[in-house]
Structure formats: structure tokens, C-alpha cells
Length: 409
Image (cartoon, rainbow, N blue to C red; front, side):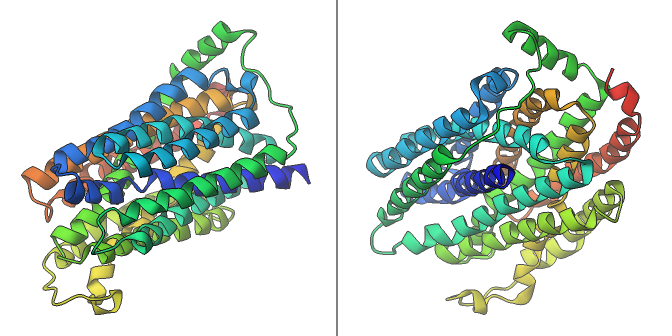
């Protein structure tokens, strides 16, 4: 029963932070319209979100087991509740930076806790793969909800009406806080070192392994692709397809829904098919979508658009790339974490979060630069470069994880 309670708490926390974290693409679009900033300036919001995630994850991951995962998650939820209320009253680009910085700090606490707890409530790699994919799938569902939630509060006559969404987000965070507060956790977490100094030493030893180096590069490349597309898809829909603002945001939800479906399916497929073939097939199909589908989307002659039903079917095709890139992140994480002792999961998760955050920041900045200097119709073609590197990394990781005795030494 306690394992089920822990799983529900993990799902709920991830759902809340999915909405908050990935509203950055929506706020980037609103910042350009409401606060008078350009594309490159607006892209800094990604850094305000991701750099605190990286810094805090690095600092707390190795000794978070000593603090307690439940306590860490409660702190994160309390912080974002306050930040959401502050965004409503602040209503400025500066307040948006503060919001995402707070969300970043809080998510570092949440993600390291959730990833570390997965190993304590699963018994083998198949269960680990399935739960990891399911949690990440719920995360994507939260993102999809965000793309409909924000437009629901938008108004053509009141430019500040969208800020009311933050009252709802604060309320959801407090509900999650309440559920977590009363949930009973088993405290059987292994401590990585004998003291805090040894905790950090174990983390740096982990980083010295070739497996870890290849893995964090792979995580970095994936998040660069995912966040680069996700953060800028609303702007792409607005500037290239010339869709109204609300429809541009809702169209971006197709990517999030595709990611959710892909990750949920991955938990089922990998029980029967080796992960290397799942991931290599997925990345190849994603590259083919960029090469063959994206040009038709860019060249789409869009007429008067008043609703989603007015958009030609090809306009929905490019966001389906999410279906194929979706399994990559959770399966890579699961494969590497399953190959390590449970006491090292917190430290490894810290490295995962650090490099994921850096990849998200760099990906959004690069796409923002390309939107401004190469044109919004050309920016997404450059994702083919990290996709190619990622494909090569899969086979290197497969070789390294097959040498389990070397991993554990």
C-alpha cells in the first residue's frame, strides 16, 4: 500500500511541475507581446528555469537522502505556490524570470527525489523501465494540459487576463502539498557515503566512469532537441503558420500529447523489444520527419484560421515527431540507473538533472538565435545534428551497459 501511495505522490508532483516548467514556451510568446522583448531576450527564460535546476541538483543530489525525499518535495511545492502568486501581482518580465528560477530550484528537489524513489519501489529493470516511462508520460500529459489551460484564461480584450491561471496553479500545488504531507513513506534509503564530504566524493567518482560521460552527453543532446522544439513551437505556429495566439498555443499541445503517448507505449514495448532497437528506430523516424514533413509544413499556404478544424492536416504532422523522440529520455535514464547500485541513484540522478537542464537551456538559446538570424522557417532543421550524434551514442551505451561488472567497480 505504501508503494502505491509513493507512486501516486510521484505522479501528482510530476504533473504539477510539468505545467509550470513547460509553460515557458507560452510565456516566451506572451513576453514578446506584453513585455516588449525580442526572441533572443525572451529565450533567457529557459536559462532562468534550467540553470537553477542544474546548480541545485549538483549541490543537493549527493546528500538529499540525508534530508529526506518527502521533506525535499514539500519544500519544492511550497516554493512554487508562493512564486505563482508573485507572478500574478508582479506581471513583468522580471517577475517571469523570478518565477522560472523558483520553479527550477523546486523541480531540482522534486526530480532528484522522484528518480531516486523509483529504485526503492521497483524490483527489476523491466519494472524500472515501465515506471520511469509512465512517470515521464504523466509529465507529458501535464504539458499538454498547460497548452489548453493557459489559452482558457487568455482574453483578446484584457492582456493581463492570462495571469489568473497562476491562482489555479498555486492551488494545485497546495493540493499536491497536502496529499504528500499526509502520505506515509518508508525510509529505507541507502546513504551513498559515510558523511557529506564522502557523498560528493562518490558523485565525482561516478562522473569519472565512461558510462556516465557517454550517458550525460546523450541526455544533454536529447533535452537540447526536445526543449528546443517544445519551447519554440508556439512561436513557430504563430510566425510561420500565422495562426492566432490561442490556436498557436493549443497546436503545440499536439507535441506534448505525442510525447505522452510515446512514453506510455515505451513502457509496454520495452518489455518485449530490446531498448536499443526501440530507441534507434525512433530517432531515425524522427530525423525522417524533419527531412520530409517539416518542409511541407513550412510551405503550407494557410488561409483564414478560426479554430483547429480549419488547419490543413499536414499542419498537424510535424508535432508528431514527439511520438518518436518520446521514449528516448526515460529509457536512457532507466537503463543507466538500473545498471547502478541503488545507493548511487541519487548521485546519478543529480548528474542527469544537471546535464538535462544545461541541454534545455542551450537548446532553447540556439533555437532562439536561429529563429532570429536564420528565420523561424529554418530553425528546426538544425535539430538533425544532435539527432545524429544521439543515434551514435545509443550503440556506445549498449556496449557499456552490457559490461555490468565494470560498471559496478
